[in-house]
Amino acid sequence: MIKRSKKMTYREAIRLAMSEEMRRDENVIFLGEDIGLYGGSFGLSAGMLNEFGDDRILDTPISEGAIVGTAVGAAVTGLRPICEIMFMDFMTLAMDSLVNQGAKMRYMFGGQSQVPMVMRLPAGSGTGAAAQHCQSLEAWLCHIPGIKVVTASTPEQAKGLMKAAIRDNNPVCFVEHKLLYKEIGLVPLDKDFTIDLGKTLVEREGKDVTIVTYGTMLKKAQEAAEFLKDEGIEVEILNPLTLYPMDMGPIIESVIKTGRLIVAHEAAKTGGLGGEIVARVAESDAFDYLDAPIVRLGGLDVPIPYNRELEAAVVPQKNDFVQAVYKLMNRE
Image (tube, rainbow, N blue to C red; front, side, top):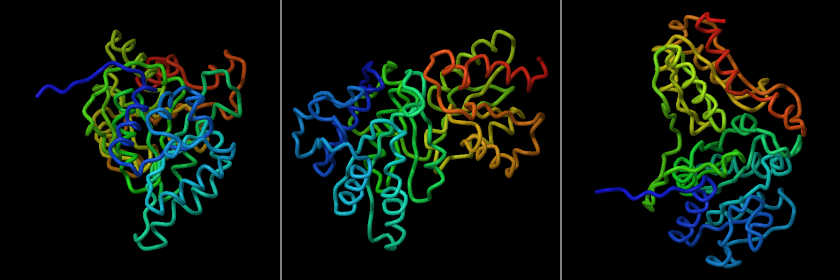
């Protein structure tokens, strides 16, 4: 049977996933600031109010604490809320409800209570929105047992992961890089298409160097790999779609094969998720196969600047990947 697919943007893929799940299950609701008539700050929910009405598309006050607190309460009492936090940065205002309530209730009540909710978190730099609107805080969220953290790098992944996140019975933080909203790709139209949470994908096969990255860094790594291919260097790229709990199996297998590892993310290098990946590789059998020290690429430890040139300078770019590979291959 031929599976139907359609070209659409990352933004449209997320909207499609939410709409399909709301049609499938009347307990799925969507709440956030300006998501109704306005259609969301990034236009992602345009048209959803007309289809689902204001009893399921809920415009909220400007209070992230109220949004997430309401979602936790709604989830515990039988609904499956999706909540949009306008910018990931504003999760700082909602951490109490998420960390001290949502993440812990299933554990505290011996599994008798479930908290099926999704927090959509537009993240990352590149839009000129400056220090309070461009952060990548996924490592902070990954430190909290009881929640899951996922991120999609393509429209297809966005649809499949969003549908799986909505169906999951735990709080899921869905990290969406803002620069990806306009990216176009083929997306399956199958209403049952999902991508299981807890997967790490091999996006490109190679034998010389392993790169582990996600979000917009994936595209930069792929561009670097294409450049390096012409020089006879074959880069393998892995994309951990679920950042927590992360599937380390493919990463360890890749490092054993290549003997060299680069981990990269846009978030600040200090305390970033890359350090956790490095530690787990060092604790695994792959450590004995390393032919060179591991390289971490991360954002500089500064707030994201407003100036576009400075903004680009504080996060890894294609050339940083190329230089890191040269270093590992002793071609500096």
